[in-house]
Length: 212
Image 1: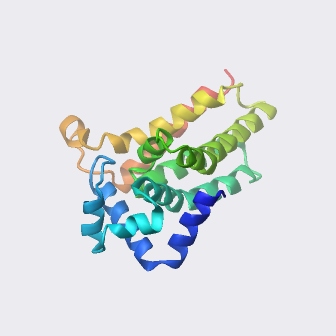
Image 2: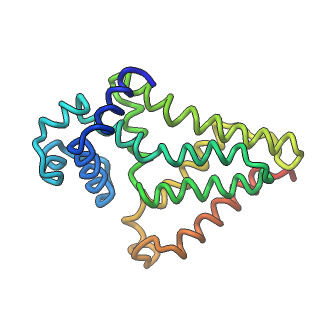
Image 3: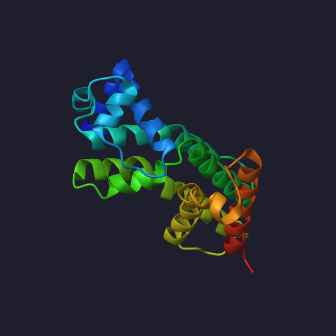
């Protein structure tokens, strides 16, 4: 972890007020279909002074980076364990898709927040998010694809195309929540819809990967 990440980690580990700011930001982002949030909104929701954001995180983008680290860490740990399990490659893909969708169920803003930070003008933040989230995810997916090829069950697939296809599919249903009722008469993503969507995306991915 670089010095930027170390600073953020120390801040959240030792400070109750830093955790309150993160919880407030997460609550705001989860309740709206956007990733725009102001310092004043975070301060009002947390009940704290907005100056604490700069104190703990350096900037609003520093806070958002720390939020990504908080929200994604457990999922990345589970993904690393999944890659090393002695189970069929097809089962790994299904569990991977389920893991991504379940993460987005809890943090529906996460993928868009990551892309916001990747386009940040601060190169330290951009590099931090790439090193922490994007590269480990791509590496894990690539290993699962290679394992399937080696076992003769998957055809060779471009890891970049796979990454964008899977992450995009898993995220878009949450990004498009506003259209549920208008287009499909659906009010929310309940457990039944979630499981059906996991099956759908998994089947779509495996149809793409399997040898014809």
